[in-house]
Length: 390
Image (cartoon, rainbow, N blue to C red; front, top):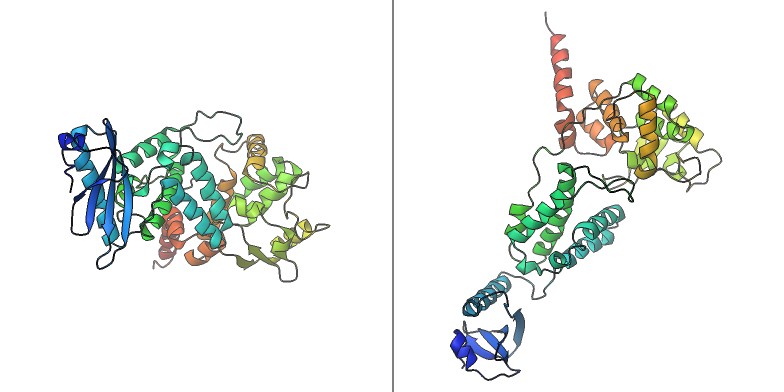
């Protein structure tokens, strides 16, 4: 058996296709395939106990290492892979990019198309666009690589709604958290499926920025909401009114079609939302009448709240018209579509509706309602207790 652990011993070996082997354990061998006088590549061989079956894994040339360190690096890689297999890891090798694609496919297999499209878009922008990072095998992913990826992402300016305009606005910590979270989910899935036996690299470097999602402080009272509706274009005014009547995410309201509303039962099915599964709510008579008015002369698949040209609204189409209406109504610059949701949730909390019901109506968790609106419930409770004073 050849000696391959020193530079001099490897230089004396003949060049050949078959590796020169050196035993690491009774069932594991480290091999060196000499290609020419300048070097070669490393491989490992694993034999199944009690069987003649052999498995091979290419380890690479370790070209970045000094010649004197290549054996130790190859031995360390072989031992790490052996440990990976002994811990139940897969023999298949996947890259970071492939791990991301597996998550997108998982979402689609679970019929979570919105989640799949969102993840796919983020991976396209922040993972697949970085070929070196995307092509990194999962088992070679290090904390340093993830730290560099995170730093680069954090320094990337926020994306302008108008894709042709280059933004100079700093990236929000909440945006960074969302992009990191979806990558972390993909890496965790690969870890769970045995493609790597350690999640240390990303569990330490993809921790979210604390307090990135601060309390939604831009509250618009009833008069301000009416002013916004009055200064909006006719088609936008209908959408803003709908957003002012329901504590839902703007995108969920804009995605309603005629089919979502049942005129007989005054009920509304919420489908496209971060909450995931469809849910149904019953609308009060006045709100139901407003919704019924929007269904006139429309097919079931038509947008319930359409633009003047008949197409559906989205964040790109309402952003600038809404800004114009905000300015015309002399409202705070922070009066966005999301501020309408915050305002309706605030009203429900202040009026004493229980947290669970508010969470169900708004399509979020009780934890998030308590986090962002718990102070209002505390104030409400204080006033209620004051009424008990003798």
